[in-house]
Length: 383
Image (cartoon, rainbow, N blue to C red):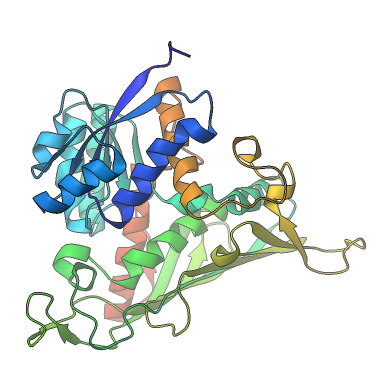
């Protein structure tokens, strides 16, 4: 396969998402052979020279830099993959697109809808491929859920309810990390976790018409990372709850919290329709629970193990039946999709999230914040 094209990748960030995305780029040719192209890890950016140098060796990048501008302008780079904190999404992504680079950006796309709209508009004008990394779209069970809805198996959808719960900041002495500061994160559990379930709501059920929300910050001060003897103010939400009205008449609830004791990464949703229901729990990501009205063969809910059937959209890329896949493979699936769309010049949507999707999610997040502030129902208006 010497004729396979090589595509250069710049990774912005070396921590949690830098690791997940770097692993995915390396694994695309392992699972999807022949791949649309061979990802070549060219340069990785980070603020700490020692740590980014180690990351370059660990992940196999040709070089490293502490200047993100250098990374996004690198002539060997075709794709810029932005896994930086939220306040560093807009400028590097825009600079990359202005330089003709294709872009993958972690969620939430930006700190607010205005920033996200600016990014969306540059993507439109430059015509590059630009994807917002909502990786849970690429869980095979979620793909199956969408397929069942598209095929009318559930009939008319009445309800969507989703919860994304974690507990990693419940200790009041947990430090004031960037995710707890509005100037860097934009919002708290809402943008971090809520953006995922908002995107899944749009992906599975359709556009949101209006929201009513409540937010809460349970611990308002925390120790500073630089000096634990001093404390700083938490300026984002610790949890939110919202009711949602969809344009198609369905209604729903959304909830996210980083104070749900005992929950580590509990992203779950249930959809109820006139002919049946489906239920998903990320902590059992290879399974989808299904209830079909009048199905005498099951007489109730049944668990579909997606790796056991053709329901798994990526089955040929992975293991024999009974050999489950993991969380990290959602990124492999996602970035393979992006790479294929780039090489074959196909649209990212509807299965991948575009910058338009990232922007629309940001508008809904902003509307929930405004509703919580004002106590009013807020209708969603896209610009």
